[in-house]
Length: 219
Image 1: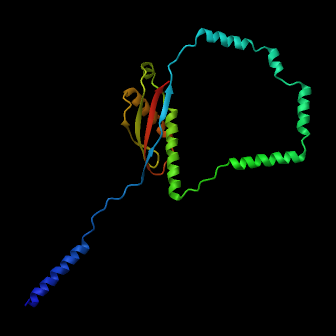
Image 2 (image 1 turned 30 degrees about the horizontal axis):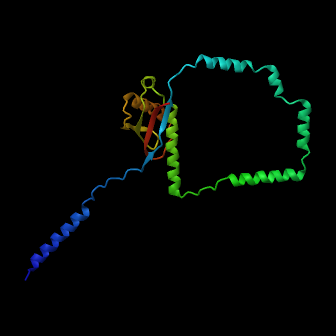
Image 3 (image 1 turned 90 degrees about the vertical axis):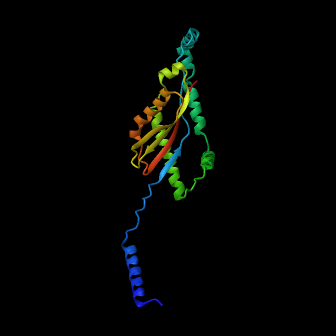
């Protein structure tokens, strides 16, 4: 049989273990990061064409067409006072019933043309807002994007995909090339456009990761 002393020691040891477990602080848990939005945008195209001189024949045809516009031809386009008066009288002779019918017809057409408004859930509304935010970023970059002159002369074309990371205040945290166009000059032009435009980005409210494809194309 187990002695009373052994039972007492076992109870004391068990109590010490429970006290230790109670006093030991829990392991720190990593705080979850804020929501990160990944926006995939359509290609932002920078289309350009090499400068070409117009042929001399085209200049001659343009001059001849300008000379053919004489004062007599300009006067013929205006209606005479009598014709204008007849037009005003014919418009004024409409009956009230006809006028009301036209108004009702135009009103019914405008109502028929209005598309039904979509009702978004809170989650869908948030996604729609963030999608529109990506388009605002895209439009801001487009204002500062230009085709490098040397690339135009060499006939270089390509598409670069940029990875843009913004904090909730719209500050640029990171800007990298996810996929190169194959030409360093085109890649650099796309990067510089984002660097110049990022100060005009609106505040997204959360951390945002945007994948922006920029296509350089000659026509």
